[in-house]
Length: 165
Image (tube, rainbow, N blue to C red):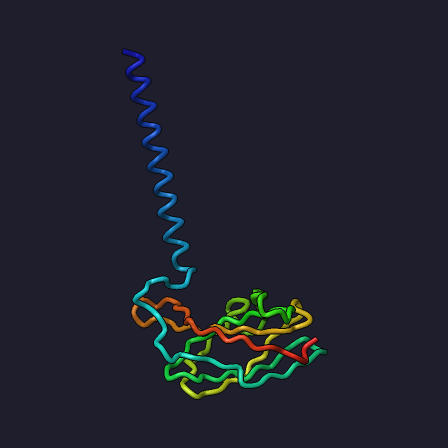
C-alpha cells in the first residue's frame, strides 16, 4: 500500500510541475506579445505608404546628422525606425540604431501627430557610435486603429551618406 501512495504523490508532483511550466510560458508570452510588432497578416500598411530622405546635413563636431524626412505616400505615418551602417558595402544591412533626443526608444522616431502625405519634418540624430556614417535606412510604421499596435511597412529606404565622418 505504501508503494501505491508514493507513486501517486510522484504523479501529482509531475502534474504540478507541468502546470507551473505552462503557466509561466503563458505569462511570458502575454508579456512579450506587447513588445513585438504585429505579425497579423490582416494588418499591413496600405500600398502607397512611403517615406523618403529628401536632404541631410552633417555636423562632424557634434556627430549629428540633420535629416529632412518627407511622406511621399498617400497615407499618414505614425513613425519610423532608423538604422545606420559605417560600411558603404550594399550587402551589409544597417543595424546600428541612431540616437535622438526625445525618442522613446533608440532608433525609433514617433511623430507627435501623424506625418500627413507630402508633409516634411527636419529631425536630428546622433551617430557617435557609427563613425564614419556611410548609409542610413528608414522603415515607416503605423499604429493600428483596431489593435493599437505597431505595424511595420514593407517599404524600406536606404540612402548613401557621403559627408559624415
